[in-house]
Image (cartoon, rainbow, N blue to C red; front, top):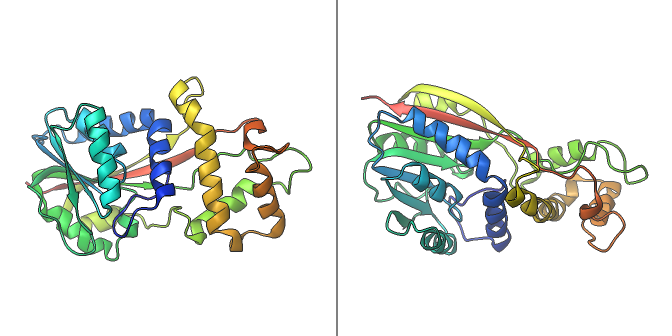
Length: 284
């Protein structure tokens, strides 16, 4: 559940994680966009904007849920947008998906007034979230809605306790702390609901979605191991200074595909997490 791009250049490892994110969370995306569609039932649904689109997981989900909408995918990375365009072609949505290269810290991009603006895992990245929220409010048609989605906690893949002799109990909790404070792409954001109200949005609602993919889902199951490996590699590489030597050694053992404690050998490996959606409407 990594970040999307508000500004800067693309990180190839991030792009790979976003693609895994799409595979393992496709059922969650369906649930989330279905809820957003119900909330926006009074809007025409002709123009949808995806801020910080990344590789296009949200863009494609929105295009499918809003079947007549023109969806504008906004990202600061041209490499990410190229992947969005490729994905749109593969999924037969190229006629309705537009890519927009823009740095959200530099100003509001040239976009038509939107019935829905979607900002998933991006608002906490921008330099001035309040300014972006005001601009998003102004970018909506009267009655249009803004949906902000954030991780409510870091993703977990490991069971609470590993095999006896493999490190100290509580590794998952310590990894959560390292991610939250270590700049790995973990959650670090306020409750956005009052921010939406301060930006002029009304009828603000909040909903938290638990994430625990169905183990019988073959698409999600196939993505679980590579996603866990990619995420834990990112944690090890970016938060090593927040982990003690024993925990770093355990991560090394888990990420050694040929070792006796490789992730593929860990019983109970699976994704668990939450995402919170904050939704507000522009006054009619």
